[in-house]
Image (cartoon, each protein chain N blue to C red):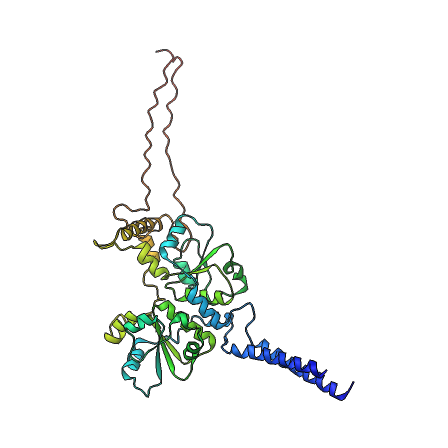
Length: 205
Length: 203
């Protein structure tokens, strides 16, 4: 082998090493770049309203997975029906990957407002997961719209009244005190009238 | 051999130019970002915002960035703010201004959610000299800039504004859930009357 050939091979090896360093600094292919993430955020349908969630919960939608991102104490105090508690800082732990990386289930993140859910959603998009949504307004909005819906004004549209009507029904379902009169938790007493059985006659008087 | 070396070097140059185009990279991995997600240190307090806003002049190092649409921006914006619509954030020039560390950027937008998206993005990029203003433009304008009032001070949407468990307990619905799991349905006790002994026969 000529000296010049050895030099060429040396240059190639140095180049290969440099190329390895350059490419290893970039994001893994499976994860999105910052600019791509911005586009995803701007274009995605990422929110689910409290009304839509109430509707799906009331119809016992089996494809729904609710993730409560608050701490354990807050979760134990109150959570939505069927929710799983994954505090935000633990969201990307390996044990939860199968829950949040879903093709079939619709995963909905919520916290007291949208704050933690927005961050959780952003992290899942960065990981390339799909089917994740943010409960718009979180539990605070859940109370304002579902548990304690506000009656529309006299000039409100029919659609507003229909929405209010649905929310009142949802409030009764989930419990919120919007329904006046008798407490909704008490089921009406079941009155079963039984016909008096006639005494069996017969025998000798 | 010389010819192969030239081809090889051209290939390497092409590879390096592809990579230098993507010079905006995440500094934090998703796992690290999750760990730091609860930090709200980059949220500006209403007091500081008021101080900065009213003492701002040409020499100050602060720059307001309005993330709303150009139409909303034209209808009204904070004094001295520049408009970088969130939907156009990834455009090259916008992106550079947005992550620029020349000024301390103070970012506001259409909603708290939009601003949190922007702020969390900057946090993951490792940018440090920025603030975000929570609340939409109207809230900022009415409760901080024009009238600093009691609503301005404690503003943090992530705080529970209600005692959820208490609200549900007051008038429990059939599907409420509070801590200890679903309440068991009361057992239905149906008292049945004793059947009268069948009469008959001879006494």
